[in-house]
Image 1 (cartoon, helix red, strand yellow):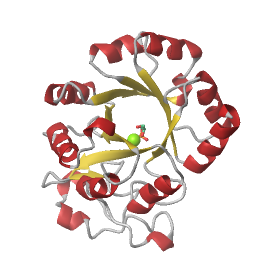
Image 2 (cartoon, rainbow, N blue to C red):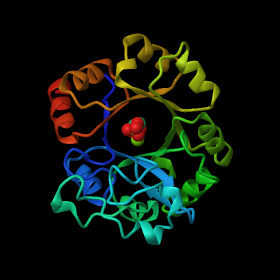
Image 3 (cartoon, rainbow, N blue to C red):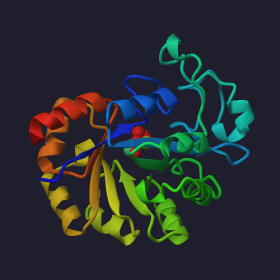
Image 4 (cartoon, protein in one colour):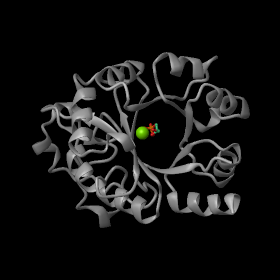
Length: 245
Ligand code: G3P
Ligand code: MG
């Protein structure tokens, strides 16, 4: 059976503030095979790792990422909302993250958050950064916005892409294929045997988010899907050992 790879969702985000360096380092020490992170652009077009367009939930700032320069955003506290011991965490740039990631034997899922705000040129900016750190081959670019998939494939037809969705649609694998995507990333409630079969028939990788419950992990492993995104990489590894050994 296919071994399901474990991607730490926003880093090991159950243990440290999501999308911060401690969360990524903990994903590495948990021995997750991959890291998933979310990318938005600042006012000065610096790609930064933060899930929401708005700063409110995960920093002590207000307003939108796109309205601040990185110099301004760097001053924000991106950890105290999670726990006071992380008060020195800040919003990381993609560049800083990749400098670290380059040395880690891991895969990357870079999710471009272009479904709410269409950040101009984000695809090219992110691609150039991946190229600079020579990590294109071990990265998959995903997005809920199909235009992002199409643009990435125009920039480099061989870069791996994934269409992300939480919506049940007929012929979802066909749709992903029509975009030129290499994978489908779906919310866990969309997962069933039929989807696994049709993805594999279409030679599409299938990965599922966000898989935090042991029963959901077990289902993913038994169906032999290609990857899961989880906030709990340690537990996901333990459960995988039980299934695969
Ligand atoms: O990439 C999988 C997952 O992260 C997509 O949803 O909202 O957690 O970024 P979200
Ligand atoms: Mg994400």
